[in-house]
Length: 209
Image 1: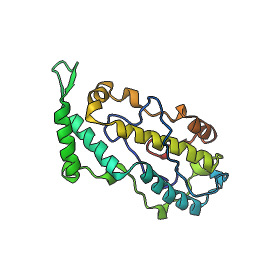
Image 2: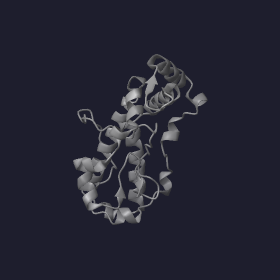
Image 3: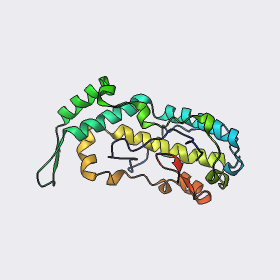
Image 4: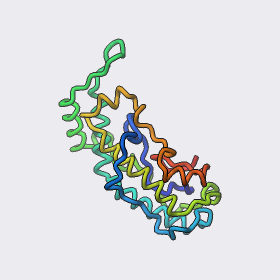
């Protein structure tokens, strides 16, 4: 959205999934806020607004998805990938859940030894350099509409991370992520936003299109 991303990026941690597309549970959803007037249009943003939004959204994203959850889900991903076995015909995948869980626990205890760091799954851009970009300046959606879409995407990403576990590993691998692709257009909040701002990219990784 801005020259530097206005929120922490949530890339595809596993190559397994980006966002779970089952029934959405919004009962415990957390709303992120830019801290800016809700009816202000993004097209009216200046660089100071961009910096304020960047800082607030970084903090909000961290509230929704903790470093501990990022490490846990990445370790589960590593364990699934490294303990899964494919038959010679590549037609069947088997996963020893007990072995997978043991690897995941060891990884969580010593994540750095497994090359896993929470910050690697985030783009903690320096908000001091954040500026409103042309996509933002051409966007007539309001701050509240932007926040609603981002909140829905980030909460959905949280649900996905929570679903990444050895117990679900075989299903995730066999589906090759087909059931977990994120399409912001399926969220009413994002449809409303993107209808007004088609050049702004909204995904689990928020950035420029």
